[in-house]
Amino acid sequence: MTQHTLPLSRHWGYGDLLRFTFPAIVMIVFTSLYSVVDGFFVSNFVGKTAFAAVNFVMPVLMILGAAGFMFGTGGGALIAKTLGEGDHARANRLFSLVVYAALLCGILLEAAALVAMRPLLACLGAEGQLLEDSAAYGRILLFSLPFFILQFEFQCLFATAGKPKLGLGITAAAGLANMALDALFVVVFRWGLEGAALATAVSQIVGGAAPLWYFARPNRSWLRLGRAEFSRNVLAITCANGASELMSNISSSLVSLLFNLQLMRYAGENGIAAYGVLMYVSMIFQSAFLGYSVGAAPVISYQYGARNDRELQSLRRKSLRLIAAFSAGMFASSQLLAGPLSRFFVGYDPELLLLTVHALRLFAFSFLLCGVGIFGSAFFTALNDGVTSALISFLRTLAFQSLAVLLLPQLWGLDGIWGSVAMAEIAAATLTLLLIAAKQRVYQY
Image (cartoon, rainbow, N blue to C red; front, side, top):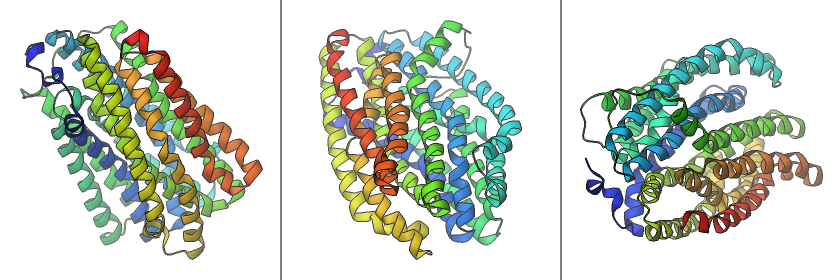
């Protein structure tokens, strides 16, 4: 397949961008529903302590799974750029290399985490039943970790391979399997927290193994798994280019752990449970921005590789306008749905429900600006500028949020915790727009 036969080379209007990125948006949203579904069943059918345990261990699991985003975004940008340069055979070799590397990475991380999980949770402050439940849930999910990493990786690579709808279908199947198995294991079989973990593990195996099987066979995508030429340089470029997405996911998880520590101090177990609801809503809303960025990235990388500066300028302008429209809609809907969404998870506890509704309405201000930082980081990754992308991710998801959650509670107490993410997003959006403006002459967008 030559450069000229790839649809990525055409002019992209607003409708084209939305149609091309929509499967990636829904795909990432479906993935975020894993923990949301677990949270619903655990909270309503197992109990508040078990619900807090899921939220306590989930940041650790997400840190491990973030390796998939690193290989997927970093490798995807390099592969799409290579396609734009017209070298399809090399693009296939690069694709195979990053997939095999991610699988090996998952196996090694699983082995290390099985040994370290319980001591780590204890060091983070879990004790008693919270420690037992957190360790039990995490241990089961570690057995599906290599597939979880592959699932994250392929979510980025489906768009690069020109098969975003197939990626959506596989992710939807995995998500529906998780929902059905949660209902079966938790409600019917009454396996409790372990049943919820097993349901998620099975769905992650489906989400990671199905694309592996598809790309290993003759297929109609632009890419196929086959012989890979080992190259330290390619892997280094992939990891450096995808470092921003790795940093973003790791930082978000580290900040979640910091939030848990602060909430234990200011609000106790109810605070952690309320924060879990905020994270579920935030994951779904931010997944739309992440999905758009993942879907648009191969288009941007291709145009950059093809040196089509005018189209690159158009993509940057259109994307920022779409992000602004998404942001306004998400903020408005989060304010209207704060009550129903909170009641969905914690309606059985009036005190916890009141706390959660109030927290969500403050937290929702972050939806107005978080899309700018998410897209900005992905935009520079697509341009193969991993350093700028990592800088945005590091400051947005770790530095700004950590400072805010440590300092603002001293001024406003518990409300300072709920509003800290919004304050951090203001700083991150300002930084991102300044960097986009400063780099225009470098990349001619």
